[in-house]
Picture: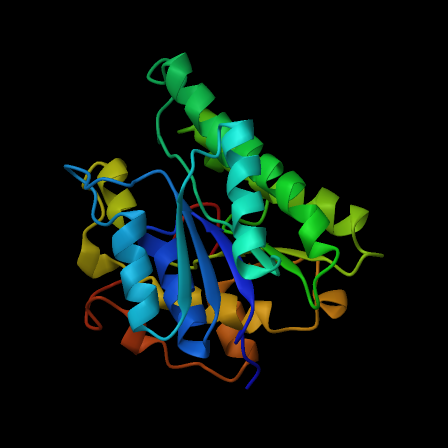
Length: 274
């Protein structure tokens, strides 16, 4: 089994949910995690801060650098990346996990919400890639991983929430472009998306229609991410993976342990056909 020991991972939105789960999985190997997120003080509705996440990462066996950063802010991102590279001596992996969601139609989506999703999902992803790339090009086995779906142009994924779909697909289109642009540099750029809805704080944004027992735990995405990030970067780039696909290819086919409730019917995630 390959390891992330000694690797430095810059993870956006790592204070909770899927980002934190990926951080903890890397920490179990002895990885070095940059917890790049906005929440420095306890949030009234959302769990965790950059500091509580850093404590969990250290307890799991890794090193942690909590950095408060809003990925909409160019200067803040540049400063966070420079701080991370100086602290750990470089950056090996970028996880673009931070995301904003609003599953609303045209007339129900205020432009400030449209701008938020575009600024975090698409622009923020592009910005973080741009800031980290000089360090990745000097790293051994560098990877960028977007937590974003395979592009699916079926209108049913646009009709109910055009703004969110455009913003989320922006992350995925960065995979297409950057994997081609940096192929000769050996920088892997891939996307990973859960086959089922994951039980995170984002469930609140789904209006309560999906219950936690209909979901899987974030650990399934973290384990799949680990398998991708330990691949040889020149041989694994430009892919749109699902967690089930990655685990299945590694011979892991019993996913019942990832379910919040192994007896419940799971809900398929957005953007995925049957």
